[in-house]
Image (tube, rainbow, N blue to C red; front, side):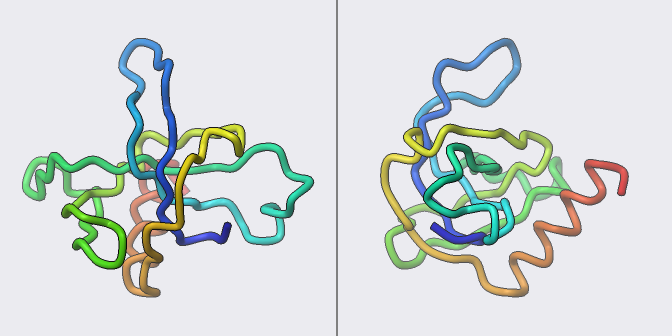
Length: 112
């Protein structure tokens, strides 16, 4: 598992307005914190409900490799998951340009 990879994650159960379901997630945690001894991983969920005009901070990822649908990264929904919740992957890996766009959006969401 590496930063920038998309895996299938189990986000159930969710609470309130949290994103749930089994869905693709983007690993955003630093690689040096992804060793086997690390029990958790920080991810951003993806959605297939692509809304470029109403969600300007979402980053669109086109299908490739094992990612079958166009998706958008949701930087406003970061989650820490137990590694066992990542059930399949990697589906693909983001390009440097895509990862830079995700980082920019995440910084805006966090006010950094």
